[in-house]
Image (cartoon, rainbow, N blue to C red; front, side, top):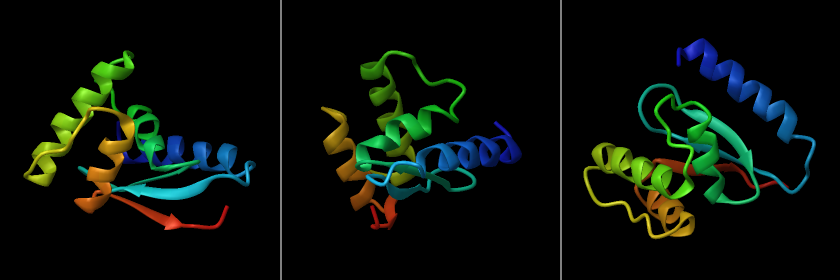
Length: 104
């Protein structure tokens, strides 16, 4: 997607998700422009990233594997994909995912 399309999707998502006060704000830094999104926990990175990735699988396990492969390329090291929790932990430890607003 173009930068404009990503910003539109992200902005729409932000507006929709701000309504829930359980959400935290995160930033995915991989590839081009960072993707800011709201989620209850860091595992929400998978849906946020899927929403802007044209080649993302609709199958959750396959998408987790695809995302980990892409993240490995950017991180220059392994990213676990046993489940969404360890994937998000590795993304955070590599600096590709960060919580930018802890208010809920």
